[in-house]
Image (cartoon, helix red, strand yellow):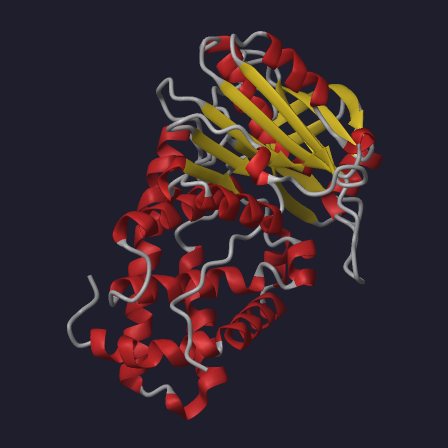
Length: 395
């Protein structure tokens, strides 16, 4: 709970902070990474180049402030925000002491952008907001690390590449077994791991990849699409390294599995919707259902540019053949255009799992809402940094 003296201060200043959020985010990241270049090994170069990651943390703090003063997400919605961020942080090996560094630079960026408008009471109120947010994350992350049995000093485990499979144009699967010969960790369908890539230039970059088949007790599988730069942005550093360099018998360092896009218990019909490499967590969910609940009705919908770019489509057909009731629909942009949500069969009470580019997911969610599917029945995964924003700012 925000203190009584801070509530009116945050209410009064939230619109100004929201209005300058992009500038605050830019100063925050540029200053922190400029003075602490070792952090470049944690933050994605590609996301920094596109600006995607810069606005994620500041936006989440501002959204949390709006929540605290009753102008933002309700409690159950923000619980979801905290859970998603905590899962992501654990996959990156974020530690409690790093929150002190981040807080210092974030509050410094607020002061730099807003200048003399940031009086001591305003600075104290927003510092309180940040630490309430940070404390919730630190507590949840500690529990997640404990459940995963992670050593805080070294959250990584070595895996050997036991197979490499060309799945489609620019998409490769890697099968990975623990290098120590011990069993691979159990995971829930829909979760991901982080690959800690030690690159030829001596730097380390961290990228998260969904596990693309269900837990079987055997190797883990990730399916990686090569990221091609657009509009002047660079190609994906880690995806290119995995495609061009990593071969069978090589060793990779992975995190434990994390992520909250996991299949809920129950037997309600499922609608699984994906686009591009977003098929990876969907494939794991479909595999799991085929193994454990073959009588559960499933509809799978996938969108891609063309058949040759459609990864794991043979897996989809194979898993679907083991289900009693299965519908499989595909849209290819080059021939059939975008997914027509009105043509997707909807079972009453169906649970929806959604993964793909953000514009695609927005299109699908809008169509499902129009057809009467409530938000509570739609779960989704965002590849990259999810953007959280406070209440709209008046013009």
